Image (cartoon, rainbow, N blue to C red; front, side, top):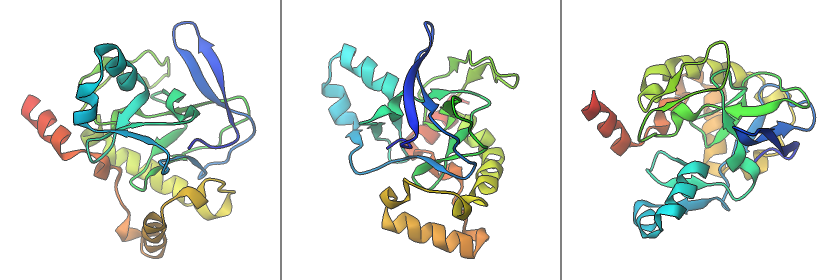
Length: 204
């Protein structure tokens, strides 16, 4: 589920829809959580769909650490990538705001963590745009992204968290353990699907 203080708008004719903040959302806020209503499509189910439907699934889903495609039931599927994104996924089943998001700002995240099958050109326009998003980005950039996540988590308990009730109890216990002992931090690298990691390694 996407944060309730968001709405869908047209970004541009080329990009299409995007998600925007309706009010100020501070750094450290959970922006998206993988909840129990998310649609899960495994490889067998995916193969049964027509090519046209597979294209739709590819466009609006991401592949989680189990190798399963997750298709958001709400507006979460319209969040766009930006190399200067203001949110990022964590190893805890949710995305977090890594800086303050002002009312009217587009909510953007990092597609490089989504267990990609192939590289694609990025036209986000950010000053730090990587040019292309690659399957190996998660492996190569995880240490940098972990620093951003840890920094954002420092504000976790000082901001309103409307999505926290949707976080699984097991994940909450992992978070509590991490706040008590930061050495137990769960790296974003844990989102790497083993099958995808092997595929990336074979391609090198």
